[in-house]
Length: 212
Image 1 (cartoon, rainbow, N blue to C red):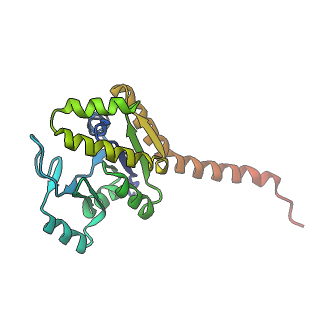
Image 2: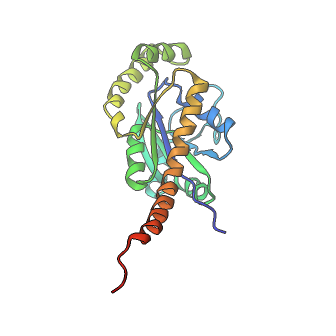
Image 3: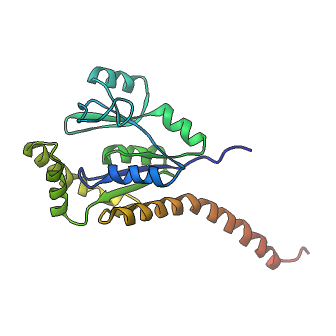
């Protein structure tokens, strides 16, 4: 029996909204999700490992991958490239896994165009002041970088209506359950629709005109 194809979902959000933590909890709590590892030209933060959090490459290698059509999307963010390697995503979907892409708005829109059935989710804190507090609380970036990320968040807020769901990350555990429920609804909707259509069509046969 052919494996049921997985669904492709994009989880975006403001830097500091907690999308990375949400994704980690989703992967811990449920077993059918797989996180696609992005490729980037930014430098690793402390504790990040090549091939785990990201594939860390230089600009030349990234641009060569673009030229070889090895990415299903890519974008620039804060002067660095980010992109999604093609082979891993296609293999996991074919195996029936639900693949998570943790990417920015530019890439999300590319994915929706290439994969119309994909699910776009945008993670945000409950308010702008909370976003600033979380960014400053990281303690990993300079005030200049934080200001750049907040400026970028303003720009990203203009694109939120392109997403299927807005996920407000206030309480982590509640948010993870809500996120999973949204994904389950999206996965089951085409099946429910197909089953309903088949059933109602069969029932409607009782009303068809008798052959003359």
